[in-house]
Image (cartoon, rainbow, N blue to C red; front, side):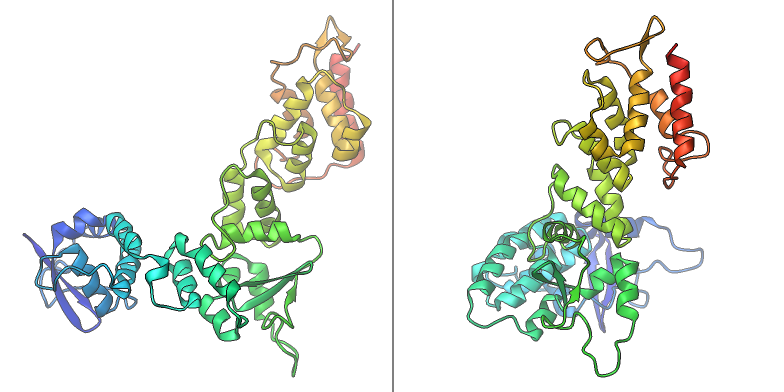
Length: 388
């Protein structure tokens, strides 16, 4: 069995290549790449070992080997009650995508049996994705008599205080900085002399602007911190939740979350009216929804109402009305009640009206606001083609 040499800190290990390839796609891919000409293969000898990154410690690696190679000379099988050992296994198996070992570690890590504080267990749960520890940890913290201290917040990575409406949140500063240039710029500004830094305590939180609602912010945190104390990951079908994420990710330029929200927002049937969905699509630039929404309004028997125009705005209501009136019979304008448009595809005329030459509303680029006269002229041109 072919063995490879690994260096962890200042220690050398020899492990069978087949065991690593069988358990980890990371190592499998590593062994596929041929070395440059004239260069010894990494791991082929003690003089040319594979050097593992600094985050891997000798103690963690030894514990992983006890599970990966339980009958090897690296020691007996890891005991079930060795929680520190199984935490090491979980940490490295996540890093190297060893799914079987990851499942085994999670099965051995029961919340009540691990002898650590609630704060330490919550921090581990967040770092290592131990979702079944989240609620017990939160409950334990909520039931204890001592308040959460600054030290607790630092261990949990919740060192930044934010105020939304009348609710206080604690979130990791680094996560906000990584995801949002708006927060990154905010944190880079030095505070005035002798003034406490905003967000450093519950008494001096960063106060978020009024458009931000508590429910919207909670939903954002479920995506931003999916294994945190703010609850489990946001479900795919939670349209209200993903609209909240889209709204705030646009506001704070969180590109990754914005893309993720758009990917989860497929045009839903039976959720809100067509008018409300179209209004949201235009407000938040959900381009995939615009054609769906206008098509739905154009196909319905009822005409565009005053209430619809109040939700959509007069300009958009006129555009939708023009799409509806593009359906004509015998050169005559159709009246409400005589329409049979349930299976008509208005996509071509929608693009003509909502995305006339010189604009890019439906092509994936930024919206261009048309002057009112241009909009009315576009609608007028459509009417001339369908109304005698």
